[in-house]
Amino acid sequence: MTAKAIRLRSVLPLVAVAALGGCATRTISTDRHDLSEFATREFGSDTTLHQSAAARAAATASVRERLTQPLAVSDAVWIALNHSPRFQQLLADSAAASAATAQSARLPNPVLRYAKIAAGHVTEIDRVLSFSLLDLMLLPQRRRMASLQRAQQRLRSAGEVVAMATAVRRAWIEAVAAQQSLVYARQVRDAAEVGAELARRMEEAGNFARIEQAREQLFHADAMSELTRTTLAAERAREQLVRTIGLSRELAVLLRLPERLPDLPDEPLAETIVEQHAFEGRLDIALARAELEYTARALGLTRVTGTVNALEIGPADNRVSGEDRLKGYDLEVRLPIFDFGDAHRVNARARYLASLNHSAAAVVEAQSQLRESFATYKQAFGLAQHFRDVVIPLRRSIAAQNQLLYNGMLISVFELLADKRAQITAVRETIAAQRDFWIADTALRATVIGRPTEGPALGSTMATSIDGRPPLH
Image 1 (cartoon, rainbow, N blue to C red):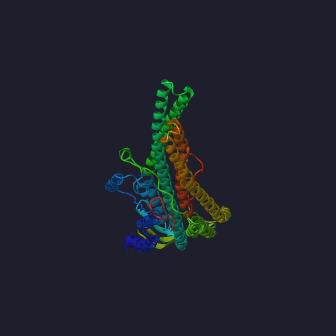
Image 2: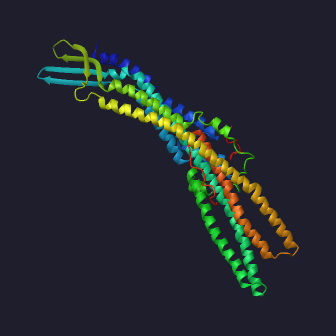
């Protein structure tokens, strides 16, 4: 049998064993499909990694079609998860991590050592084909660890989907509320202009005190200043939404927003419904437990490899010209003389204890975060409901009564305008309260899934489910 045949016969079993590591392409495809299913289930939108210019062009065409109508929050989420360059980067990083996990479950390639020594008419050839016997023995353990790493990566990727969708929802809410406030600020400015002009003419005719005319002019000046601030706030909120969903300059000019935020639901979520959905596969708790299990497996592996971390064996072939060929095997063992592996084992045990306490802390934090998020949600709903059901109806009633008094010539036009000015604060706070509720709703969704996010700062002046689906079901 030739040396080439010997080498092939030695390599074939190793190739068969290496195939046990699995197919990286299939692993990436499965992970990507599961991530898309998760996004569809939680946010009504799939995720797609575009790997060609044609795919990217098709996605851009779909974005253009969605931008022909005022942008709904569901469409904003779809654009971010299927078109945003930032999220495309995250999907690519996730695919790379899946491939790296698949690689970690494979055996290292065998090593072929070849030496040729010649002196005069004598030539000596040494051939040694070796592979790691220790890695082969530990292959099942390494494959289990790779599976745990893959589970962690899938949970992290799901968390990135939640973070992106939550950021998009919040940016959309802020942008629509800011635009709604801008429309109202323009109405206030127009009313202030009318009042200031009327006061000027009456003061010139001697029918109005100069101080009263100055008050009307000051109100107009304040309305102009507020319009400037509101315009800037609306532009900033719009650009934040553009950045979040990843629109290019050409697509950004097509963006139109709804005229107002969605109405409040008839009733807020019940705490029992929130608790029922919480902790059912919550991402942060599941990730902490997966990390703990992986660390425990790693501790067991360290106990094996801490002392002997290299054991290689393989067929050897030696041939000297004019003499019989020598065949045998080559064994290489790294002796634990300077390093007995005690530091590795201590390190592994310490990391296990840290992971154990991290898992326990994750549960405590999750429970607290859920309580805090739900409390914010309830308070935000109560505040928005108060403005909707109490403050605004009272303001409308007062306005109607003042209109009747004005029609009966019992109050002047300036008293009527003064009442209109009193409504400004109520309307602004109503818009802010509605905005804050939807932000709180978005934060609660993310917290229930397991990616907590900061809720609204209730009380700040300019905030059914936003996309028409029940927030939780």
